Amino acid sequence: MSLGTTENEETNVANIFQIVPSSETLQLDKEGRGEVTVTVTNIAKSVAGRALIVPIGNLDEGWLTIEGEEERKLESGIPEAVKVSMELPKDAPEGELKFRIDVVSEVNPDDDFSEGPEITVLRPPASKLWLWILLAIVFLLIVGLVAWWVVSGSKEEAPSPEEQAAAAAAADQGADEGDTVSGEPAAQTYMPNLMGLSRAEAEKQAVALGLIVGAGPALGGLSLGGDELTVAGHDPRPGHAIGEGDTVTFELSADMPDLVGMEEGEAGLALLEAGIWPGEVNYRISDRQEAGKVLEQSVPPKVETKAGNSVDITFSLGTCEWSPSLTQGFGSVGCRSGSAISGLYCSDKPCGVWQLYCCPYSPTPDLEAELSKSDWISPKGTIANRKDSFLDAWECRESGCSEMQARYLKTPRLKKGSECRSFDGSSSEPVRCGEGQFVAEFACLSGKTCNAWRITCCPGESIPPE
Picture 1 (cartoon, one colour):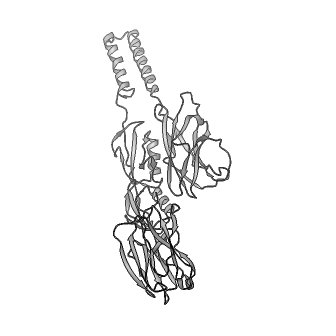
Picture 2 (cartoon, one colour):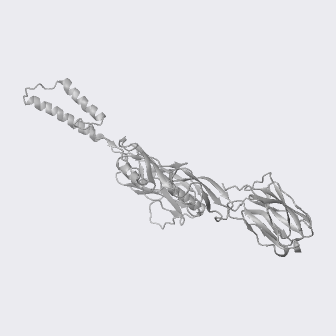
Picture 3 (cartoon, helix red, strand yellow):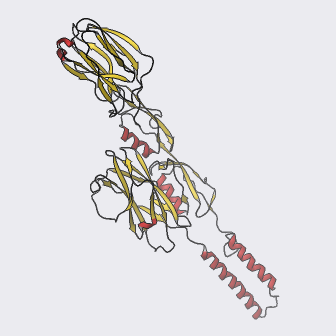
């Protein structure tokens, strides 16, 4: 993601990126330093992108820095954390300080971009110099009263120089201990009970007390959860003594969203908004959901969950299906992308019309698959087994399919195991491998048109994309 700046200008926002800051404010410490994390989620197709700092008001873009790589690939539906740090110079002018983070596509920056929300910079806590000035005034008043008492001819003995020095030392000690000008302790501030409030309201009240809001739940620098999360606890606890500039951290909770039926990108956004991190991701063949949609989740919907926890998700690979028939034994037929042959059906006597039973092995089309064809067999013979391949297409070139050929599929998403089983077939009798198994070898056993045949099935491991 490129680190850059641009002037604030009126644009038609394309909104292909979701931009969510960890806080609507950036609180600077006593040294004038602070940082905030902005979460960028691409809600369109994957694209290379970069972030832009847009200053507002009296803020100078040179005070801000975006950390990380200059350019990143923004995958569709996958959140990306952008950390922004700031250092305010001592001679910075007074006035409102705001900025926002915009994101643009490297491919089409004029059309594919989004504007982030405004972030307000909170200046460092004010100095306590005024307290020392008040104490100096009090000291001068004491000296003046002593002088008036002497001049007025009071019969009482004036304080000795030692007593006056002790009074001055007591005043200095009061300044160190935070005493008021009267010598009595200053009013102590205590942490209120913010539990049950929304994240936004709790942060607002904390800032009003002079507190610095600490980082919320995050993984790998990525801030989780929206402003509507509920505060389940905080540190300091309610009733604990606090002071200006102290840090408060919130423990947040949210209801687990119902992910079943969502596509991968949609589920990722729902979890991000709820402050929950995707845990283990699995894939399984099923007819209960379409391919690519959530089939199951380890935590049931509407269960209250602590922000920052994770949930395991299982996506559907889709269901197995029979291919169209290889009509009259001419031509070819194959499985769809991401599937391989898991069974065969000869629907005619003698075997001249074939169908393939195709089962998915991968959640996405495998562009790395290596395809190659076997030798022709006629009328008997074996389409020989290869150690790292399965069959995914069938072809006949003679009437009645007296000569046959298969296409091999070699892919890193299929890993053949050692436990293979053979099944015999004949005309008008479909033969299928077991669940999670695919055809690695085909053999004609008899007949001019392969009326008797055998398939060898080996287990294939479905591997999710990296």
